[in-house]
Amino acid sequence: MRHQGRRAVVATSEGVSRLIRDTATVLDLANAAIVSGHSLRAEIEKRGLGETVDLAAALAAGEVLAPIDHPDPSHVMVAGTGLTHLGSAEGRDKMHQDLADLSKATDSMKMFRMGLDGGRPAPGREGVQPEWFYKGDGSTLIAPQGALPSPSFALDAGEEPELAGIYVNGPDGTPWRIGFALGNEFSDHVTERQNYLYLAHSKLRVSAIGPELLVGEAPADIRGTSRILRQGKVIWEKPFLTGEANMSHTIANLEGHHFKYQLFRQPGQVNVHYYGTATLSVSDGVVTEPGDVFEISAEPFGLPLANPIGRVDAPWPTVKAL
Image 1 (cartoon, rainbow, N blue to C red):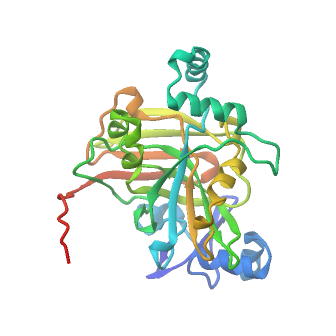
Image 2 (tube, one colour):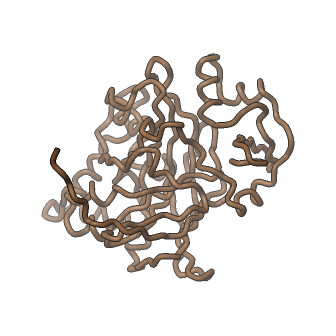
Image 3 (tube, rainbow, N blue to C red):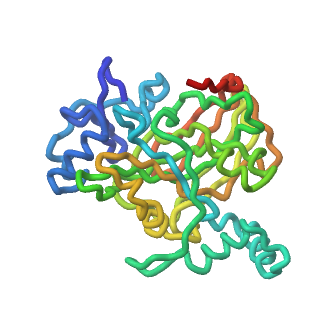
């Protein structure tokens, strides 16, 4: 966050938020913990806490930043995995009925079934690969309260309420998970539905994480609420489930299949990884508009993540030959 004109990091415990002494960024804090060979909590205790901060007021004032960034955004990899969540009981029953009829087995259904059958291996073992997609580098991460610019060529501006893992690679390339955050994996679902091979295009959008970072292990059963507000009024609202109890893959399996690629284990690199969702307003026929506000909340993560939809002109590019 920004505090009195300078960057600072806040630790919240039992509802009280305090500045971590001599700490400007979460990345600096995490790197110091890695070098010292102890946990993030131990590094915070070593530095000590200072004055209290009204985090809700700071969020309302636009002073809260994304819970991770890098001085060079090209050193941040934003990616995700899909078809990883079981969904509601009704949706799950329907999916199981469809899975029983092989004539209805689309590629998406086949991949989902693969996750059900092999996405939860024993600890230390390799399970089935999930769907994987790329979203961008650190320049695509939007702070809480910041507008999510939808390009003029987009056919949809849709939310995806998710759990995101935040990682930094140590000097030897070992990935270290800093913690978890709420995420809005902003996507273009109408483009994706034209043809599943357009998935890669539909995911090349900005996204938002935060405002708070949960250190340690994530609860197995996370229950939250996703809503859309238009001119201050709720036009759509639905509960969402995440956490391993509601997933067809373990987090360890998703992490393993991401970090098995050397490309994502570059020393000093930051990774933000979205684990997927089963709750989308577009599935209920909602058509969003610029100015609509997405709000995603879940009790373990403190304050809600809220972002309005923006719009940005994206003229057709001209490529010049040298």
